[in-house]
Image (cartoon, rainbow, N blue to C red):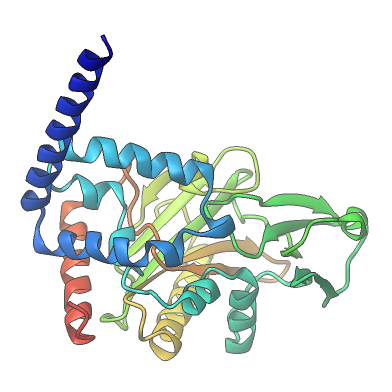
Length: 312
């Protein structure tokens, strides 16, 4: 009985390995580069708190299903993440780009609107850097986190009682025209200093996060988002211009950055706020938004970027 089970397992394992080999040869050369870069940089990216159980499950599922899928499944399923940061193996660079506190400092220095930070805890020390009103609501975020995980609303009166570490507290920005949570993903690439390669609106009913991983619905915007008013689009366009310039001026070694932007209505005007930048980010969303032309264009630009850096 045991030998029969063992033989069956070995047959399945050999069959799976054969399928993996066939799958590898069916990939185009850019996807092969993406896989190799992913393996090389895996320990740099997926360590410590950044690697969650859900991510383990996601990659395990990918490993078992990919050999049975069409050759372009990898590029669709990874949502562009294989072509936006996988070449990075410098742990400090990766850590800085995932650090929300550093992004707040970058935006503040560059004059880009971002939610006001009133307190943060880093390296075991808490720093209050703004006034805290007891009767106001704020947003508490982990300094290093992704996919909307760990983001909660907190009252000003409760902030002094927080016992967590490595977090920041920011003013709560409310969307202009939606009672639900909404933000925009602006995807810039280093070879275009005029327009983003993609612009996506994400909306979630209830809650305070509108990440796709948290179940948000997605809408392809093109040059304009259909659900925005004139003032909202004007504020969004202004922010997009600032983010393109920031990408080109400070992050030329990054092929692509995915920026998360909210638009809020102030008393006198409408303002767009950039929450953070992301590398190894989603440039499209599977299975909701799959544009083959966009994917192919993105991959070709990524390849040219690697060639220009002698990284192929």
